[in-house]
Length: 542
Image (cartoon, rainbow, N blue to C red; front, top):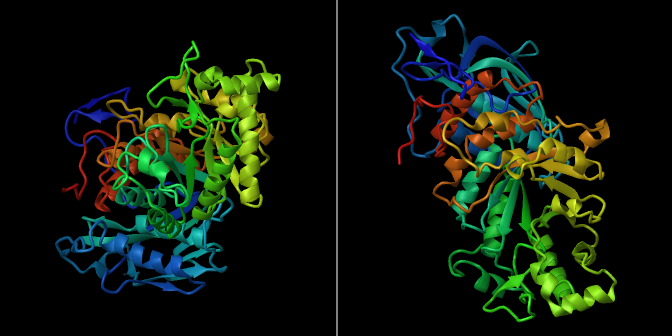
């Protein structure tokens, strides 16, 4: 066979046939520690069961049901289990065959937590035919969230073998695993294109199957306001694309939160303030003439009734979303309408602020945090985009800052991290993982190699980086394209945030990513090819 070198992919491309051979039974993201042997077990769908030997709760019971389905009937409850022609000799005569594995023990050592949280424990251990656990398989963790991550790993250890003719085979393995970063998220934008609940749930499944743990739900923006507020229903009635179909009711939100909870996924809403939802501040032109029709700027910061509204609205949000963190946005605030509004100009003059509108924005955020702390009894916590620090705005203690500026703005995300972490706030990174920017060919390498701690800073600064997230802004994607556009590219972000820093060989990662892409396809997700010319044993069939 002849080979053609290529600078655009991390492997050598052959002149014909598939470009690479995927791994078999390898886990994504790569576990922290794993030892395996060539001896294997055979799983039988009609005999297999998970045995809960430790603590149990609804999360465990639902996971047992779900992972049995994922292992044996992926993607379609009515699908017949995968099968091969019977081998010429009984499988028991294969030299590496150990036994039929008809059960896996689930051993949760501590009572279940009800909700995933910022400090949830996700470590777990798997023992399959180890010296101290012979001919048995056990998943052990001190946390229900670790059990979920372990069950996902176990499901990926199962593979089919054309060589043995076995459809469900698993090697003897021991794994000790835990995440490198505590915040491993994905931002889903449902404001620029409405995403139906079914799409949001599929995205949540994909997060869980890549051991990500945060759905950052960018609910509203200047394009639309699809969140239906119980207290203020007119906002979505007039602000959504279509108030009878393109909205998220309180029941819809609860359904998403419950679906995510059962998978160990936090749901953090974003209501961008004060800039993106262009409401409340009337816009004047340079001659002091009111612009019409319906041109508004950032939220009017000088009127007391607006803070009454914000207090009631965010009080509702806090009671609707169980996670204490709310993303307040704060990016790309235009001062155009503020600078021309006569009421605001008078307010600026009265406070001696001249033309420094960052002082007005500081005033707004001070008032916003005060009223939201009052209504939530000091329980609400904040995430903001980095612009607020760029403007030297002081933020409440405990605020998390999200860094998004990088190459696309002609900046280095490493330099931005070094600068932002000097302020002493916890930080999450998004800059190198804007997946909405696409290009022809293989582009996952740049996401995979983006290292969150590769910046010039002290150890204390680096300890402030709690993780990161992939983002998919939806100007040019909707429910038709958001999943294939995102995956498997987001898988590389998941591994960067979970696995050890030393796991950075793209040539080796390509082989495992190829297997994982086919795995996700087999599970019923329409995900894009990851490495050029190839095929999957079970292809997508509309």
